[in-house]
Image (tube, rainbow, N blue to C red; front, top):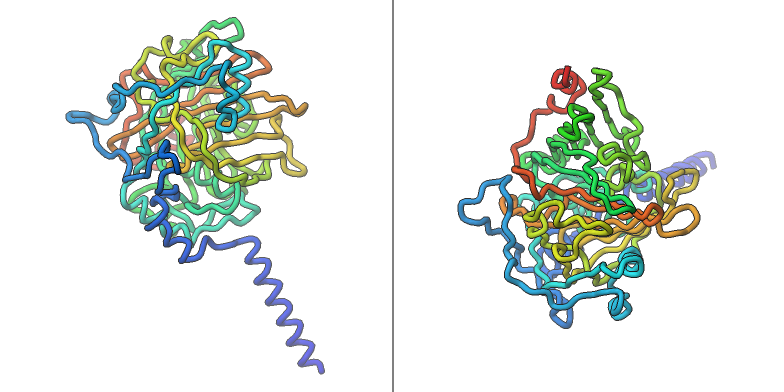
Length: 454
């Protein structure tokens, strides 16, 4: 009798343990589902076929041709410069296209008679090296998200969840998306007030490492870091020499490691608050830190619901945008519609609502992700009163030499203040320059102190 009870208890304990393990550390999709990445899906998880009416073409490998004589970091020419827009969406005809517009875009139409969306032919230019595709295929069956989606395990390189089942998996695809292995990126951040005046918030240079996407890496070699950023401010003069350092992990419990160097203090300080809804010091606090790149940082403030996929008009193939002068693309009320290219693409839609026991000044957000790149291209956010507060957009463009379609630059409109911010590098001598990985020692507080202005 005792033996029977012990066996029953042991069996029940093992069953409970297996159940808990399956809940907290679910593996990826089945091998049969993963096989679709080599047939009906693109290597990163988009639908390979076009749509029924042909307005979205089939993916045929993306854009992988670099212009003759081109060197990384130079201004990247627009391969579609001779194309004309198919039609324009304005406040007068927006209802005709409402099902393919975000709430933020609709609000901009209603607020500004000058706002316009010029829709161009769709080009599915997204591409990546073969080793990124190979890693993505492996991730499909080995990656998992314990801790209610806040942590990634078993993934390395490419998209961790090319066939996503949850909203948090889509978010991780965006955060860990292909940006190369490392890059040098100068940028300018502007704030445009309700009076229409353009103010330079900062000009800075970023040194990026993307350890999750090192070519010679693996899940076993990676220490859990996925993003390193050393940023040095060049202008305006009163901020010149200030520096920020970020090191992000794939495990939320480890948190963001951040440091700040202020010239006036001449010392390096830990900056644990540089995340979530903290005002972003890069653009004088006009945005929140986790609005950078549409979403930046950790997911533990929200519950993430995967709404599904739909066709929408999104900014895309915006190489021409970065060939213009900053003052020409940044208008007094909104971005100049003459230089923003929109295309019809399929996007994943994810809704974020504040998690129990958590606080964030923006309790509801909706994100839209390009199916071919996992870039968050558009986002809307609501305040605690349920009023639309922010509308964000990124500027995807073709980086020939990777190859890839990237989006490091973005804009955020604030409906409460009637102002917006814009991040660009059109007039800078170097744009996004693909680099070999910087030494790990580059991203340390000791390096920060040594490089600080004294």
